[in-house]
Length: 441
Ligand code: GDP
Ligand code: MG
Image (cartoon, rainbow, N blue to C red; front, side, top):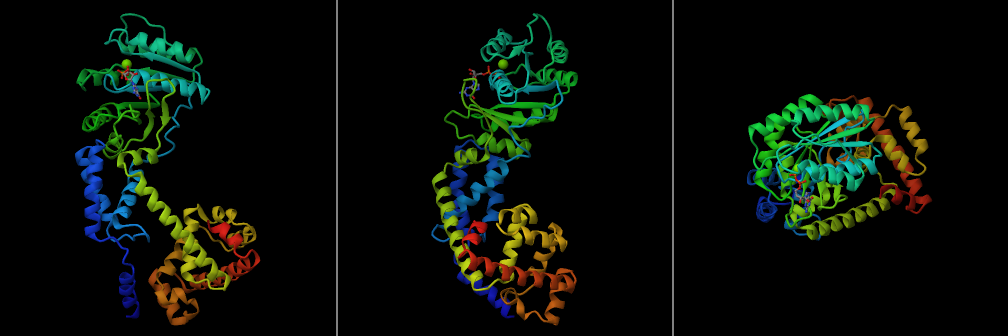
């Protein structure tokens, strides 16, 4: 009972929790910001809904307003959605010659991006690249790529008038193999609108070369449209990644969010101008800031959170020096450990902890164990966590049962808490907290 009451008081003292009203009011503005950034309507709606659920009840950091806190939550969520798997700037082009197929609507920036990417692969990744234009529709399209090739010093497949795209693709494949190229890039034709002939052509080329990467080039200034295009290309041809062009323009790049939400494909690069080196690896943080357009607020909240964390760390250190190290502290350490990539990751960061790491290893402590330990702590009452010495046989039994584990495991956990407490105390005295501070920051 006392625990349940404790919970109520906890809620009362935490005036800083976001109410449904706080969240809804702030999200109204966020919604406007998203739409102004050209995020497509259904995507914006969905996104807001998911944030609404997450934000309600979340704690508000001291010295910021609920609205500001919501913006920060939105910002973090945006980054989450924008971030795809793996490293955006790394393409799967290890087996030479690796074909890269470039697809997209006419005018989206395919030819320009093909050349930019070829330059990047040549200069940064030291790859030998061959480019070929399959654009037989537009007059001078093939010459355009040839000129760019000369400009950046990348080879292009010699132009043979009258060939169809599939024939050119075959020739590029052969040339790439015999010429010892690491990569060959196929710049396809586009249309103003997606049509079946265009898709069929791209699919035929795909079947001839089996691309390692099929990059969809999308104009970052187009909103709703971009999503339909992406879905269609992905369904019919299969896309491995997206390049957003014209991100140097006035637009706020909402297409990035739409693209991620709808296709789930990773955004690899962004085009930032007409020049050949205006291509950068996609950075979710940067684009999130731009879409939301509330960078000042985000910075403010981050600063407030950092200050608060520093204060908490300070307070914790003082307690450790006095030999107070309870289950809440241990839980925090364990969670920190999980975040930092397990025991080894954490210990390697703490000076003087090498020996301890070995001891723990010897005791068979690994990530599964950490998870079980946290489960044990979660089964304790608030009072027990603060005062682990309260744990006598009956309480131990209850806790073990609650977490589905053995009392012997709980005993090990208690031993660990005592040992770590002792050690923290010693370390605190040794370096007047300096060492510990370093370890925790
Ligand atoms: P394609 O029809 O898809 O091959 O498109 P192009 O590569 O020919 O590009 C069409 C126009 O867009 C050209 O004038 C390019 O210089 C321009 N362009 C391409 N990428 C970018 C970019 O990232 N930023 C800006 N500002 N212009 C770009
Ligand atoms: Mg072109």
